[in-house]
Each structure stands twice: as structure tokens, then as C-alpha cells.
Image 1 (cartoon, rainbow, N blue to C red):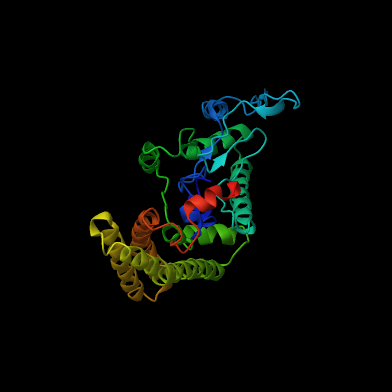
Image 2 (image 1 turned 90 degrees about the vertical axis):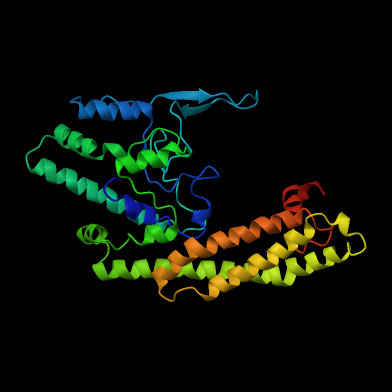
Length: 322
């Protein structure tokens, strides 16, 4: 996980996952390992010369507070929902995989880095090092990937940088590292991909990102042009005889048109190289989409009931009451 951090980040790098990582109980884009404080202490003890054996995952019970249900057996360690790789009593979970993803690629990457780690351990043992010392050496060299704190905290990115852990917070930043010489060697040594296949995989992932965002941008523009702006015009017309009652409507509605025009202009200027296009979309286009969304969200609270052309937040959240 430490030696091939970028490859692990790449396997969960998608346009949709960019909205999720770092929020909504999803881990941040910084890939780290959360073994729990007791397991962490055991790792440190091994590094300092202690035995490999001795750790035991303790169990407890969770009271459901219901007389009709039995207490559920659970671990005593916090599962830490802010960690990409938390230890959950008898397994590690990879929490960064997006819900729309096919799990095959993340699984393949996890198996690849596991095999690489075992090959490294085997090489140390076959070279004459004891089992215990070989494990301790690998723990010591990779200790900085363990983080048992709050992955959502503002301090963690600063600390991760000090540790040398990459913070590839967008899909294009992550994918740019996928065909590094280090990654190509990993996949070749493990018999997974040739160098050419790594390059091809990177191109496919970049194309997927660009196509997804192209659909999102054109859809947003269509929704603004054919739904939001006509609704704003109808609402604004109702205040022609009482302009003082319009409040900030004119400013907000005009702002939507202005920002939408900016988005169209940005989109027309996008590069035609896949990697450059992806970077441009992430750095220039997506912030402009958020600027439009902010104004449209404001307009939703100003438009006369019934004029908003799409389901409102209130309707989506509370429609089950009707």
C-alpha cells in the first residue's frame, strides 16, 4: 500500500468518485492504512524487536436497545469511516471504491500489490534474513502509511505531505501517475500488464473521465437553457408592476445566464489532447459548473412554486410524505 500508493489511488479514480472522496462517510483521496490503535502498537513492537505473534482482535457486543433483538458481536476497535483501508476485526476493507465502479480493477490492483509485497518478503527471507526480521524491516520501511487519526481533518493533508504520501485529489492528477516507470515495473514483474497495456489502460481511463464530464457539461447547459432560464424569465415578469418586491431575483437570474455563457466559452476552448483536456476540465470547467450550481440553488428558493422545471430538493427529500 505504501510502495504503490499511486496505483491504488488510480484504481478508484473516476469522475463520480471525485464528488465522494473526502465526504459522505467516504475516505479522503490520500491512501493510508488504519489498523486500529492496538494493532498499530503491535506493529511498533515488532519494529522494536518484539515477536510477530501476540496480537489478538478482541470482541465485544453491541446492545441494540431492543428486547426482541440479541446483542450483536463486534470488534472493540473503531472502524474509522474516514480511512481508505481500515481493519475491521478479521479483515481490511477498501472503502474508497465508488458505487458505480466494477470492482474487478480495484480487486486486481489489491491482489497485485499484495503479491508484490509477498515477493519482497520472500526475497528477504530467501536472502538469509529471519522471518521476524524480514517482517520488521518491511514494517519499518512502510510505517508512515499507517494513520489512525481523523482523515477529514485539515491537519491530515499537511501531515501526509510530511510523510511523503501523495494527495491526488482529482482523477486527472491520479491517472497521470498510472504509467510511471515504477507502476509499469510492478505490473510487468507480477505478470499483469505489459508496458504498452499500462499506457493503453491510462488512455482509456482518461477518455472515460473526459466523456463523462462532457455529458455532464452539455446536460447542465441544456438544463439551464431550456428549463432554468425560461422559468426565471416567467418569474421575473410577475414583478414588472412591483419591482421592489423582486428582491435579488434580477441579480441571481442574470448571474445564471452570465455564468452559463462563461461555461460555454470555457468548454469551447478545451484542449484536444486527452490528458490535457482532463486536467483542463478538472481545473477550469468543474469550478465554473459549481459557480452555476450555486446560483441555480439560490434561484430554486426564489422561483414561484410550480415554476421550477425540475424536482426541487424539498420534493426529493420529503416526497414520501405526500
